[in-house]
Length: 204
Image (cartoon, rainbow, N blue to C red):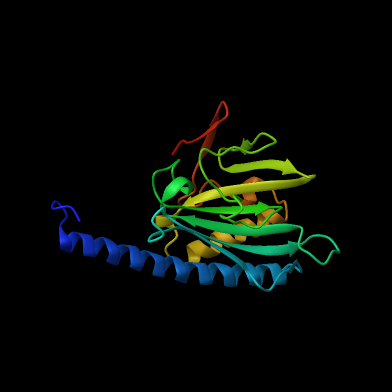
């Protein structure tokens, strides 16, 4: 270690990181519960076993992201054809656009997977071209199905009420309700995006 390191401050950094991940885990459990209850209430078939993905930094010592996906069935097949999920990014390209920890909420044709390169990272580029609706919902179409995502600053997700609002927004978007009803601009911590040419930028 370098001579300029302060041992006590270094230890404190690891304590903060550990406490942060514990809080993220607690929030994730609440979010999972509300999502599952909402899907069941609406009669949406979904896989009971969630698909979980982790990402570590280059040293394999520090966790940078965690993601969970719910496989949902919007057809009669035996395999899910869409995935409702979320990705918590505290370091790395998942939060690079805002330079602070973000949580991305998605509905894609594939489960979130860092190993397979299926995750939210910046610069964000998708084919066909991405669109941004009302500065908050990023979407495009793939195989005839809408793909969407929105982001919330992690520091604004701090109690069960805030988690519930986000979960209900996800379900409302899944049901294709009007954007103002499903994802109001008043949602605390909501990240606003703008497309500058082909570059996605944060405007708040």
